[in-house]
Length: 233
Length: 277
Image (cartoon, rainbow over all chains, first blue to last red; front, side):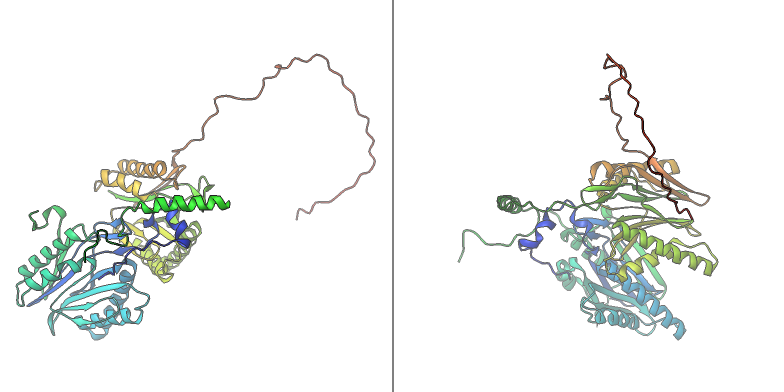
């Protein structure tokens, strides 16, 4: 979802910046380049993300965990600015935890999604955050909510996000079928993320997967050499 | 309507256009009599590593002010609490003040809870403060310590994002240091091995990055003790002159010696008291 700006040569005030010995990556903000994905299945959700965080052209963290727990059965997938998404996730986790204690029951995924939307929309000018909220609750089972940059909120059965998502919309549209099993969802997510990581420079590292259902959260990691081999050339 | 050449805006990657343009502009500037602005560097190599039983933090000791070394032996490993220390890169004032503020708040917090502070608490406080200032506080930190849950290591960026990792590097020399870590890091190393690895990583930063230099400071934090080794290794010793331009006594032969005493009278005597209160 990141906008790619075309580089125009500009003279004048940029002279000193380009002659600097200080490398670019010491000054750019840390961004989770990213490919993230979330899929609903009957009884839960499957979420997945790559593991690369970049500052300019340098990979600041090659084993990032972009699947952040917000509550026992609710996770969020973070893309965009690392600082912004970490701060928002911390705020929402606090608000949701407080709300859950007041309610004295596990919170709804829809509530978490609305809390994200509230922060992302109110501070839309200052933030760069694209978030997928996914989890399981008793009322509606597995749900995926998409909160992209700008603060929209929409529920979707399957959603992708991040700079690498553009490369896998076609794959996702053609391969997702409603009422898939958990294993099929995991395979779909792993394959989609692998394809995106192959093509997007800002995505890479390992594939982190998690499946959330009534029974709990099951996390797994697929290392670089264990990724599914899809392309033959 | 095909054309032979397509006008495309430069897409990134190395564009040699800039070299030609720079040379042109430099020529123009020199003709008028002025020179292009010189480079500025934010010096520093800092790093940290988790080993079996604790963390080792390392830092170089050069502080730069533009092209000049302002301090040849400054201390970049800051005290946060008895069990937590923090290396700082970026703007020196920002790292100093930020770490002092959080150290003070953490001490009050520890007195309030009655427990030894946790590294995660220090991390939260630092990231929330840096995020509040939206990156204008130029402090890039490596936070390490040991608490009831074991050894922990965090890297904290100026905009407020943090990463919890087994080994981290920050500063302009971080790429050189990270290269050493990526080659030789193993989980659960012994203390001596870990100290040697951190020493080598900082040395890589010192010798390959213009902004880092002088000595290597180390801080080993474990359950039982904290070793603040300053300096651990004097990587750059000042050279000893091999020759001397002073002449030895007797080089010039004395031919005659005439002594003329000067008779002086005391004309005026004044006393000025010194206030030593």
